[in-house]
Image (cartoon, rainbow over all chains, first blue to last red; front, side, top):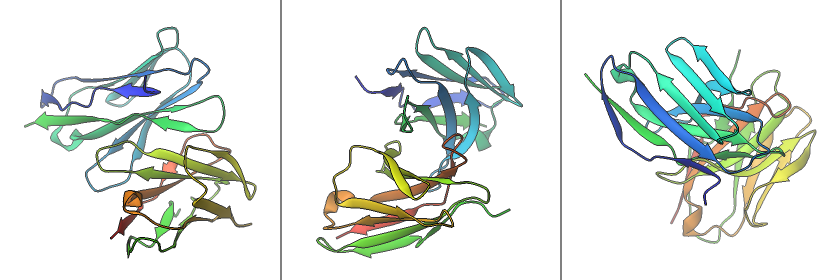
Length: 110
Length: 111
């Protein structure tokens, strides 16, 4: 079992729709969770962090965390073509090591 | 406020050679982590430096080594390069290991 798993996609949504990205992790001791956006040929950019169960909203982005189910998700409301990128889920383990998923490719169709 | 910087941007080496990559952290950050990202994969943790010491290491051989300087900048050294080392090498800085911010990366090609 991979330590951080994401559906590789591609996930295709029409412009204006909600994109839902999911991630599961295996280390129950993990306390910090992050979503990064990575455009093709660029480095990852931090877009959300979440540390406690529940929802955290920032603009069009909402991160959701359920530690009991070891599940993290990212919702993107009113998706725009500029949101087309690979979204990486990252989990900070009990030490200082951050584990990344392989990413989900998102395409937003105009 | 300068972000994370890395040099060089691109590098081409041949098998068996050695390479040194450099990273300057974001202003105010004291922790530097290095990652290797192969095409189509997520970044893989190589190691993290804090207070000039390696405080955690990922599943990488001893050919990968690093250093952190008193000004918090860092180097990644890779010896005995082989084809499989071709990747994007990313440096990320943070304050005490929390939220990490990535530099633009160094694209290493080993021929």
